[in-house]
Length: 84
Image 1 (cartoon, rainbow, N blue to C red):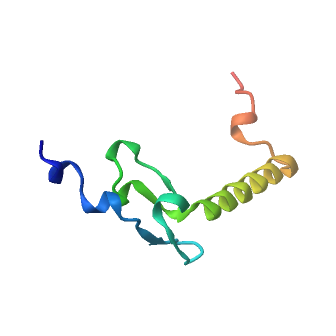
Image 2: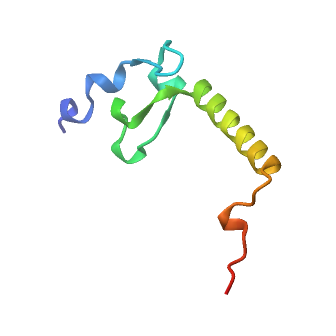
Protein backbone atom coordinates (compact mmCIF):
# COMPACT_ATOMS: atom_id res chain seq x y z
CA UNK A 1 0.00 0.00 0.00
CA UNK A 2 1.50 3.32 -1.13
CA UNK A 3 0.67 6.02 1.41
CA UNK A 4 2.55 8.74 -0.44
CA UNK A 5 0.07 8.67 -3.33
CA UNK A 6 -2.99 8.58 -1.05
CA UNK A 7 -2.02 11.38 1.33
CA UNK A 8 -0.59 14.59 -0.04
CA UNK A 9 1.07 17.26 2.05
CA UNK A 10 -1.61 19.74 0.96
CA UNK A 11 -4.32 17.73 2.70
CA UNK A 12 -2.57 18.13 6.03
CA UNK A 13 -1.78 21.84 5.78
CA UNK A 14 -4.30 24.58 6.37
CA UNK A 15 -4.54 26.99 3.46
CA UNK A 16 -5.14 30.70 3.73
CA UNK A 17 -7.02 32.69 1.14
CA UNK A 18 -7.76 36.37 0.70
CA UNK A 19 -11.47 37.22 0.49
CA UNK A 20 -12.32 39.15 -2.66
CA UNK A 21 -14.89 41.30 -0.84
CA UNK A 22 -13.35 42.25 2.49
CA UNK A 23 -9.66 41.66 1.59
CA UNK A 24 -8.98 39.71 4.79
CA UNK A 25 -6.73 36.66 4.76
CA UNK A 26 -8.72 33.83 6.34
CA UNK A 27 -8.49 30.08 6.82
CA UNK A 28 -9.67 28.36 3.66
CA UNK A 29 -11.33 25.35 5.28
CA UNK A 30 -13.17 27.13 8.10
CA UNK A 31 -14.06 30.48 6.54
CA UNK A 32 -14.96 29.69 2.92
CA UNK A 33 -17.80 27.66 1.40
CA UNK A 34 -17.06 24.72 -0.87
CA UNK A 35 -18.57 25.17 -4.31
CA UNK A 36 -17.40 21.99 -6.02
CA UNK A 37 -17.72 19.05 -3.66
CA UNK A 38 -16.98 16.53 -6.39
CA UNK A 39 -13.38 17.73 -6.78
CA UNK A 40 -12.33 16.79 -3.28
CA UNK A 41 -10.33 18.83 -0.77
CA UNK A 42 -8.38 20.95 -3.26
CA UNK A 43 -8.22 24.76 -2.89
CA UNK A 44 -9.95 25.30 -6.23
CA UNK A 45 -13.12 23.69 -4.86
CA UNK A 46 -13.63 26.59 -2.41
CA UNK A 47 -15.18 29.98 -3.19
CA UNK A 48 -13.22 33.24 -3.23
CA UNK A 49 -15.66 35.04 -0.92
CA UNK A 50 -15.68 34.29 2.81
CA UNK A 51 -18.78 33.01 4.57
CA UNK A 52 -19.51 36.31 6.33
CA UNK A 53 -19.36 38.32 3.10
CA UNK A 54 -21.50 35.74 1.31
CA UNK A 55 -24.17 35.94 4.00
CA UNK A 56 -24.15 39.76 3.92
CA UNK A 57 -24.43 39.79 0.12
CA UNK A 58 -27.34 37.34 0.04
CA UNK A 59 -29.26 39.16 2.79
CA UNK A 60 -28.75 42.50 1.05
CA UNK A 61 -29.93 41.14 -2.31
CA UNK A 62 -33.02 39.57 -0.76
CA UNK A 63 -33.96 42.82 0.99
CA UNK A 64 -33.51 44.82 -2.22
CA UNK A 65 -35.56 42.32 -4.20
CA UNK A 66 -38.38 42.39 -1.63
CA UNK A 67 -38.46 46.18 -1.71
CA UNK A 68 -38.47 46.22 -5.51
CA UNK A 69 -41.32 43.71 -5.66
CA UNK A 70 -43.35 45.45 -2.96
CA UNK A 71 -43.17 49.01 -4.32
CA UNK A 72 -43.02 48.39 -8.04
CA UNK A 73 -46.06 50.18 -9.54
CA UNK A 74 -45.68 48.48 -12.92
CA UNK A 75 -46.32 44.74 -12.89
CA UNK A 76 -43.59 42.56 -14.30
CA UNK A 77 -44.11 40.58 -17.50
CA UNK A 78 -44.23 37.29 -15.62
CA UNK A 79 -47.08 38.62 -13.45
CA UNK A 80 -49.27 39.68 -16.37
CA UNK A 81 -51.71 37.11 -17.69
CA UNK A 82 -51.22 36.58 -21.45
CA UNK A 83 -53.89 38.15 -23.64
CA UNK A 84 -55.06 35.31 -25.90
